[in-house]
Image 1: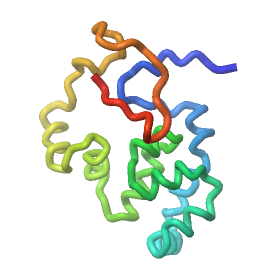
Image 2: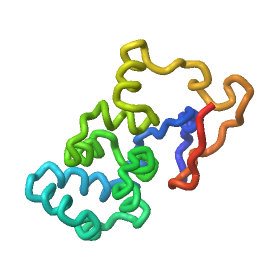
Image 3: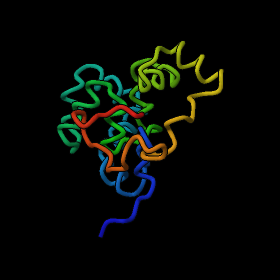
Length: 147
């Protein structure tokens, strides 16, 4: 029986709940493995071979290889675990956050310093009558822009 999830209509937001945790268990375990230097070296030497040692879905592996953190999140990744991929690549969290918003690191920093994103259009789908609430898309092909 599916749980009622009234938070599913927040534009551009994936809530890391129990369902997401189950979905991303192996993806997040892979990320945690990158805390060990020898695993980071093995991953960087042959990313696909290292990923194939984990029982992740093919889509999760493709999301990691593409370094598409938003895609990883939709597939059950938790940003605190996914940060290990960025660290392995020598990226700061600010650089990673910028990539997730389509901004450069500088643009992201400047936006945050000036108070963050505007709340307009970002509260709930359907709040202003412009869109109807619906389930979040899964996978890369299901992307859509927030209003």
